[in-house]
Amino acid sequence: MTLQAHEVGRSVRGRALLQAVSLTVAPGEMLGLIGPNGSGKSTLLRLMAGLGRPDRGVLTLDGQPLHRHGSRRIARRIALVAQSAGTSDRITVRDAVALGRTPWLDALRGWSEVDDRHVARALARVDLSALASRDWSTLSGGERQRAHIARALAQDPQILLLDEPTNHLDIRHQLQVLDLVAGLGISTVTALHDLNQAMRCDRVAVLKEGRLQALGPPASVLTPDLLARVFDVRATQLTDPQDGSRLLRFQPLA
Image 1 (cartoon, rainbow, N blue to C red):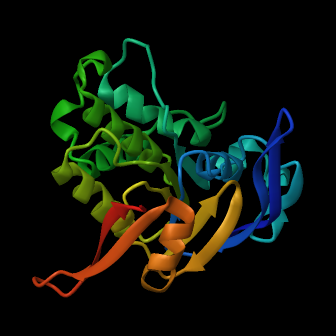
Image 2 (image 1 turned 120 degrees about the horizontal axis):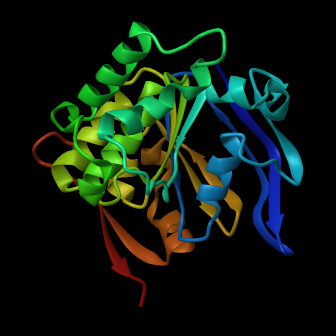
């Protein structure tokens, strides 16, 4: 399943949030979206999820305009974990995750053992099985974030969109979530602030002021020159002596 943006633009109250962004999410890849605050990452993710339409250009899913698929069909294929996802309802963690099955239910197909299995598997994948019966209101911020990811996984999507999924997580769970996303075997688009975490992606798309600045493998895209231009930082490339992986160290530009 291929998701594409073709010259996508979006403006609100005369302010351009995205300008002529074109990219393709390849089947099975982990694409990282990076850029300063206000660069358009969240806007692009919401458009990719079918939550609104671009003012210019078009988003396509398997070659057809995304909006023509209809909301239920989109929700069966694409799941979004938004940065501000939340609920004030008094429900259990299991019930919150079960909401991910909503696109698959209708008058002709009620809840079944298949749905139970999807929910149980999603909880296990984010290490929340032991908290399934807990009241949502008792969860920590990090636990809620993992529950939101489980809800998206219960949706059984072919494309998963995540807006800063490691926010509020301790370092162990940050690494677990990134490993989980990398091992899903489905297309994922992940907005990230930590550029060393972005190094784990297959490709990165760099946004600044709503424009796509670069797109490609992290090692070739995240150069000191680009990072200085986009983030106003001086970047030094380091090599981890343990495994030879590339790391970035940052200092503010003088």
